[in-house]
Image 1 (tube, rainbow, N blue to C red):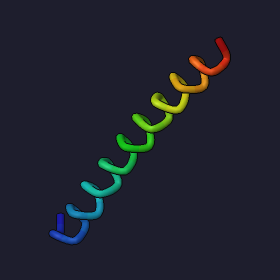
Image 2: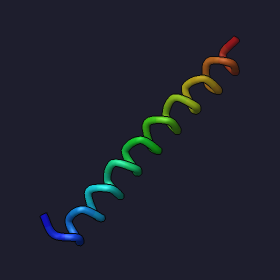
Image 3: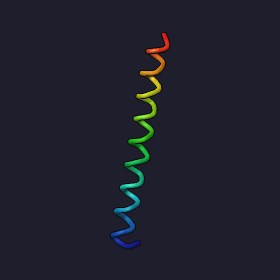
Length: 35
């Protein structure tokens, strides 16, 4: 595995986790606003 590919995979994983946490946050906020 080349260094470029490794870095790219790392970035993908980090962005995926970030998107997931953002979605959970938005979901919680939306849920609070509904109440």
